Image (tube, rainbow, N blue to C red; front, side, top):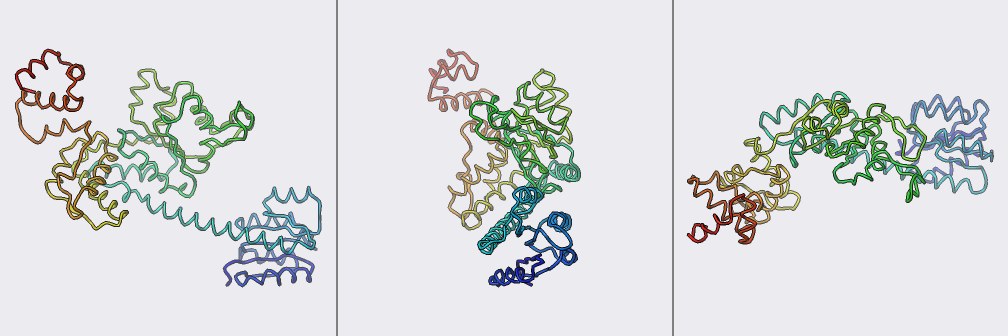
Length: 448
C-alpha cells in the first residue's frame, strides 16, 4: 500500500480521472476515485490522508460529506474542488474544517498539487513532533528521572503514582534545587495529558505589573503597546499542565485574580469580553512554608486550600543519605556520555568527601560539582582534589573532618571569614557579631 493515500470524490468521471492521472505522477501517492458520496462514505473507514471533494455530488452536497469525514476520520485533510465560486460557501466550509477550497479552472491542477504537497509536509512535521513527544515521555519515566534509593524517594514514587491517576492539583514544596520542576514534569509526562502542553511559569521571575498579562493574555489595543492579541499561559496549557513555580511570591491582588480563574475554570483576557473555558492540570511549587505565609497574612487562605491538592514535599539532599553517591555517579555517567568521555570511577576518599558536604544548593549544586570534577580529573578516577565546593559553604566542611576544641573551632571560623572578606576586620566583626577589639586582640596574640 502507498505511504500517502488520496481519495478523489468527483461525479464528473472525466474530470475525476484527470485529477487521478495528474496526482498519480507521484509514485508515493495511492489514488482512488469515487463517483458518489455514498460510495465514498462506505470506504471512509480506510481513513485516507487527503480527500478532494466535489461540492455538488448527485446524492449529497459537500457540507454533508465534510461533516461525515470529520466524524469518522478527523485526521483526514479535505480539499474542496468545485465549480462553485460562491465565497460565502467557501468560507463556511473552511470554518467547518476544510483545508482548502479550489475552484475548477485552468490553474486548479497545479494548485491542488501544491496544496497536497503542503499537507504532506505538515503531516511529516506532525509525525516528527509526535516522535519527539514519545521520546520526552520515555525520558520522564519518573523512576529513571528521579534518582535515589532512600525511603523518602520510594515514598515520592508512591505519591507520583497516585497523582498521575487523577487530575487533582499538586503542590510541591522543598528547598531551592531539590527538583520540584522535575517532579512536575514526571507527573505530567506519565499522566493522560502527556501529549498536551507542559507550560512552566516562574512567578518570581516576572515583574508584578506584567504577571497578569503573562498568565491571562490580552486583546489587541487593551493597553499602550498591545499591538496584537497575546495568549496567556493558562490558555497555552489547555488540555495539558500548567506549572506555577514559586507560587508564594505572588502579591495579594494577583492571588485574588488567580483564585477566581481556578475556581471558575475560565478567564477573560485583559481588554476582552469573551469568556474562555479552561481544561488543565495545575501543579504549583514553592520553597516557602505556605501555612506560615497564610498565618502571617501574606498568602490567601482560600487560595492555599484551592492549590493544596496532593501535597508533595521534597527533602533536602543532605537528608537523603546514600542518594548523594547514587546521584553523583549518575551525573558523572551522564556528563561523560554527553561529552564522549570514557567512564570514570570515584575513589573511596572522594565518596567520603561528597558525603560530608551539606549541599545548600541541593541536587542542582551536586550536579555542578560533579560536572566540574570530571573536567578537572585525570579522566580515569575522581580524587578528593577534583571535588571543589562553593566558597560560601567551604567554612563548614571542617566540622566533620577533624575533632577540635571550641576555641580552635572559633579560630578556624574567624580565619576563614578573614580570608573570604580580604582581612576586613570591621566587616568580619559585623558578620560574626563579635567585638572588633576581640579580633584585634586575637591578631595581636597571633591566634588568627
